[in-house]
Image 1: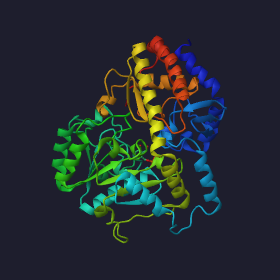
Image 2: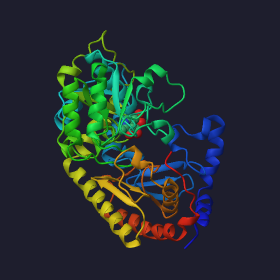
Image 3: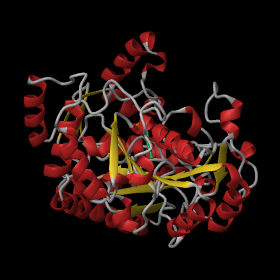
Image 4: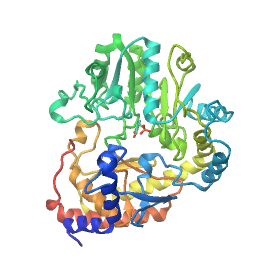
Length: 454
Ligand code: PLP
């Protein structure tokens, strides 16, 4: 059994190619990454290839991948059915600058599958949540948007507020301050965010009612997946539905992650229907595709000349083909059941291992995703996430990678995703590595630097 320091050195010894790639990359791209969430210590991993449930880094190390591009690859890496369809597509035009006839069949499928009347296509989660908020403001004629502390909805200004606020700045837990999550935001826009604590219905109602006159939207991930995986308490989503109805705000479910976790998205799991749903990530099978869907009453107000919705790449045939093939041929009810069986086995394996080793770790999982938190307490909101010992999470992540397993998406605030490509053997390999790593962390936990979650 290696010490923690030896584990860290072993990681560096086997990832020299990544160190080299980073040295070149950061000369021409600040910090060497193109999404800040990919910057890790001692340097980011640079990948060379992906197939099925596997990734290979530039040094040729093979990993069983449970990151799956932050949940975007429920179809697995380069699914053969998708590869074939995309080859045909690439040979016949990837973008026309006109509408094609492929978008309507995908729209029909999505309307039926996700119980919405209409959809509008875009490219990313970011531009889709942005449009959903604009539409909500347009139809209500109001300005404010209620979001939950710790939730992330993409890197755009209106919602870049209180994503990971530091304790000293976030104020009363029952009435959190809006804290800008980036420099460069306009204070008026930050002030238009109304922040509430997830899973606290009474506090949320009080906050929403105070802002009701100017409250355009309530936006949330129905299962927050950016402070680890946090389950909504029974009745919480139903309560938000009532608060939105009582205040006249548009209820928006950001399903950029959850939309790929169940065949019918969060509504299938929780039975609550919002006014708008936003999709991204998994629905494109690894090709960029974003979608806003919702009631006809709201969606039909995207009147040209009145409510802006535009994008050169919106509904480009490459993305649309990817979406159609992914949703109708890969993420079928059978495909989703498979991924869920795998996810369930992994979650149960974590519970068993944690118990056996007596580790101060909790696991929170549902369906194809789960998070391990180094904490004695369940995480129910951002404030409880802040009690997690983040340093041990990074130790666990490094040690798992040394054993050929990418255990979750990068960061203690993320989760694993199982896909149609994962097998029970992949789960066994994951749990065998976890068994060793759990023992390592237990024996050397004093030596692992304590890092607080912001
Ligand atoms: N919404 C949620 C819940 C997300 O997790 C993300 C990305 O992680 C986004 C929106 C933004 O999506 P994208 O990264 O495609 O812009």
